[in-house]
Length: 173
Length: 173
DNA sequence: CAGTTTATGTCAGCCTTGTTGACTTTCCAA
DNA sequence: TTGGAAAGTCAACAAGGCTGACATAAACTG
Image 1: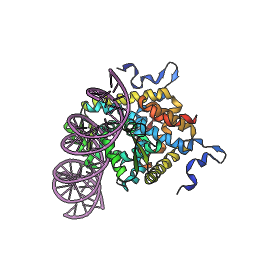
Image 2 (image 1 turned 135 degrees about the vertical axis):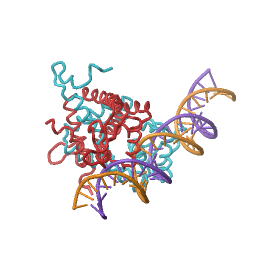
Image 3 (image 1 turned 90 degrees about the horizontal axis):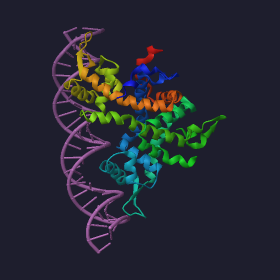
Image 4 (image 1 turned 120 degrees about the vertical axis):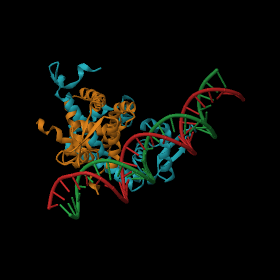
């Protein structure tokens, strides 16, 4: 399995410089993901402590805000957790008045999820902080680096998830 | 706080196109991080289940492999967890014969950590899988995208962490 | 209409991995 | 020789994953 494609032996292949594919470069990329993800979540994590919420609540709030009226099932698909796990989080958010769950009109089995004004306020606080860091990183790196960043991340996703990533901006083309 | 720097109003600033800094683009970047990180950890997570280990064990194994002989304190700094949390993981790895903990020679309070042959084997299995996905993403995206990817990730890290990210390849310049 | 599937919610229990606090042992260094 | 740093350990707890089982309502299907 992948014997011919391992190690630094493939530094030069078919006349093209592939130095960026050495094991050492890949290891650097792996650690970059690890350290960057920590930075990426650090600001929201700090804010969430003030509300006794965690990352799981943040994720739910984020995707409900992105797609108001989304169903529980759709959220389960995006988040990739069990319904029991999501339900625990959603119940807290509904009980606390941050999320509203409306019975579907066409299909009354479905629940459509919306942020309340309070939910919108918390979403704003969290995403302001996260965007602020992302904006600083983008600005320092420049537009070409950002394009590369997004290209590599998209390649790293599971193909199943790529569809969730793409849905909301297709109309903007 | 950041009133002048929020929203899509700053699409054009000082004559330079900053369309990549709109809230919508930042939101896309945030979701890219979320979905990509899931893909990034998916393969090792699957492998770890066969050994009844978790991501915490993987992280310890990774950084001990990267810096053989590293101390517990150094590992604590890199991983950003409490010593109780790390100790639980290290104890399991030592008990299972994947990690060796040697008393320091200069300072006998310190423990220097090394992977055993079995530890090296598991590290290899995990990193092969993770590198394989990273390599596919890098190859599909190309060297310029990879450079941008790394630049943005480095900007996203907490400044404190950047030093851990840089340590091991400074000599390669 | 009867039976099946789907969407959701809920209870109970378990695991991993993080936390705090308290305490001990070892041992370097002033 | 004594203070403090490094390391380990115990106990208790919380968040947020998981499985399994079960309930209900609604939609779908023959």
